[in-house]
Image 1 (tube, protein in one colour):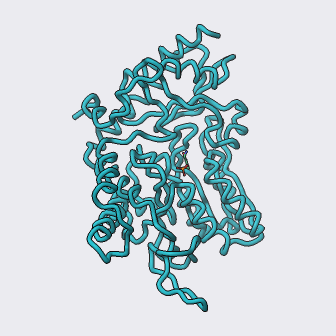
Image 2 (cartoon, helix red, strand yellow; image 1 turned 30 degrees about the vertical axis):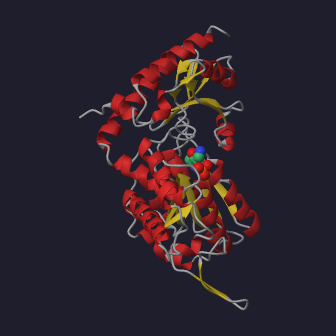
Image 3 (cartoon, protein in one colour; image 1 turned 90 degrees about the horizontal axis):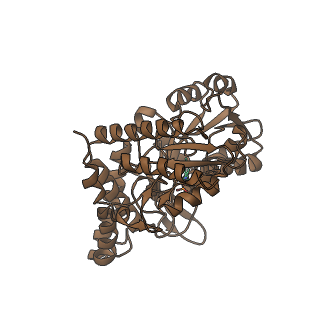
Length: 404
Ligand code: PMP
């Protein structure tokens, strides 16, 4: 059955508002997604009825908060098919999860002569932490180049893998181009040389089913706010044997077994990586987002998003001065326009209530590789977008062109 989008949109109160006097057309979902009422209610309910610190269950509220917090961890584990919720570590987001792996796995394990393999398409969050590791350890960074269609060049990737490759860190879906990367093939290549694999799923979780066991990656990271959950909460999934061996990254309360001035022993997984009071409400809110998504017909969602992407790509391609970058498949479409600066177009669209993003999309090396120093305009969808939203964008671009 097709989705009843009009009905689903009622679950997202923010979408009903006007912006600059126009009905909001929200096409900036790759930056952050909107939250359904059930997520807003879960946050409110926690603070109104259960607010207490977790894992210190000397009283009823703390017990309830702990239960909800740990239930949310289990929901995440089920959502990504992790074998055990102990392998789900709460972080502030994808960025912090990558930093955790960089500092706790990369720093102690890598040395001069080792190589970290990234792709040209990575978000800065999956570049800069590795540069820090490389600078501190003497390891070097290699980069999988693009094909002429702005996709990852698998043949070139095959040549880059060697015994020196110790870690592959790539995104499943590009935030800048909406391309789905061939991560299964890349993970297989990495395994052939015993390299550890980290998949940045920040742009995947909101659009594709994710099964970390089927992928057989070592680490998988994402942010709650890109999948209809709150900001400030994210996830690191890791293979148990790796997580067990990795030292804690941040230290302090909540992650210890015993402390004396002579020595400290650390908690078991997942707590040894969760120093300090966590984002309890955020985790519970993310659990509510997973409940919400799980209640949707995922096939119908995929079919609807596919249709929106096709409409967007066809509509933009039909506009004479518009050039789509690469071959977008999921979530986002990046484009440039002849003689129009992306920021100027975005401002004119914003005046019409249409929210898109412009610039380098935290992927400056990608923009350099594509020869796009001004960056691009990016329209990014979620399942609550409608064919009308896409038409509004296309008409909005047409209207805006009259200014130039
Ligand atoms: N990776 C990708 C592909 C992203 O799109 C983003 C967010 N734009 C991140 C990592 C970082 O996510 P966060 O800022 O939520 O930590």
